[in-house]
Length: 435
Ligand SMILES: [Zn+2]
Image (tube, rainbow, N blue to C red):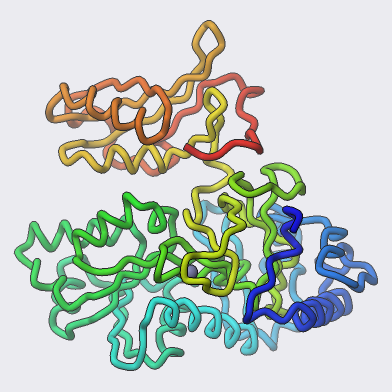
């Protein structure tokens, strides 16, 4: 089959005709009563899923601009406000916070998608799922809570607790499953070690991660599995789209839920499908979400296109590396696609590192270079870090060892990465694998 990503490999659970019918139903309803979608859809009726490509993709900026023009909820609403029963926000600075509404039916659809996530991870009626998220307007906690309930598991919310209280709660109830971000799974295990609470980890047999790239990467997954002596699973989703990826329990990575989503993988900045082994941006259409539709939505998530089925033959296109990063974060250095998260993961493998800062810059000879300033208790570790980055990323990185305490401690992701290259050099290369 050609790499056209809309002609996805048929899988046992996927009825091509019913997906097409359902997408046409979604389009018809959105074109009828959703002002934002109407102008994109005209009187479109798809004869095949490939016809979807006649619809111009939209992204988060389009939704944000619409909400700024038509506050507070914008026009991507298929029904009157009285039909909506859930309001969530994406995290972001003011002006970049997206508001997302769900009807009762759409929320049931979320629940069904999260059911598939927990079911794929083997969670069932005998499990107690602990959710290490704060409450708040973000969909992640609420949807996971629903999904765990949908497979019949009991649930305990760990919002409003610090890490020690969370560990004590996990221990008290012998929770079997932990849901959190990959970096928090690592942090919580370290707190357990430092606080004499290592026995709190013993009842947990699986960790289900989401919220940031990482849990599909072998290094991160292995680190979590070693710290917790438990299995680590990944899944993926976005507030404005839904939970489109569920874990592959056999081979790692995630599967796209092709029963509920039509997925395309395109070269960054274009609409051209990428071929096997290439990386691209995921565009999805959420088939069952009608109240706040996502039709050809650019997720900003970068994935590698893999045509092979997973070793277990599960349904749904397999993404062995899960979400590799965000299109915003990916840069091209000497022909290699580089994600700061990949550099960070290598750094984190070394025990005594402190804060760090990644700088992309141009040499006078116009070569792109990467410099990593990193706080090291032992400055001679710099060589080992450089060697490992070279092996792992195939990239020469300049390491500048710093004394601990020099870099600001409160550095979010944005402040850890500095791009000093000429603007014209920052474009993405669509045709190279990430390193
Ligand atoms: Zn699988």
